Length: 113
Image (cartoon, rainbow, N blue to C red; front, top):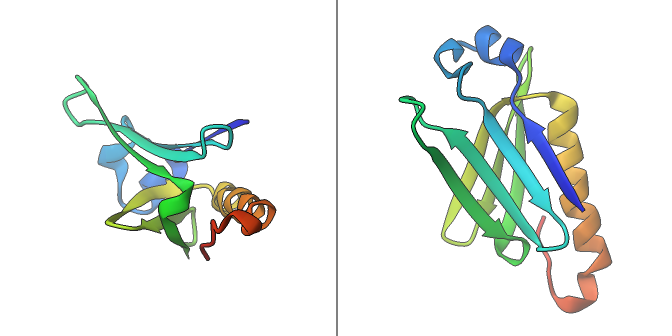
């Protein structure tokens, strides 16, 4: 199954990231491929920056909540992915999807948290 989450315009403006309103962060979780992808169109609107991490390399999911929106950081072996100004419920849903996948695959040694 493929899930897509996008940062919200209102959270970007309220948190002082109005310059990013035209280029929101997008988090794509693909449970079939077991990957999480973070994309963001670059500031000159020509290309898209994309980072992809396999579930087996994820070590921590951190949610930093603000008055409007939240930031989510997914720490992985060798780096991290951060999406800013996401909806709070979307961040909780991303974490829940990853944790549920982790619970279902615990016997395979895919453990993070």
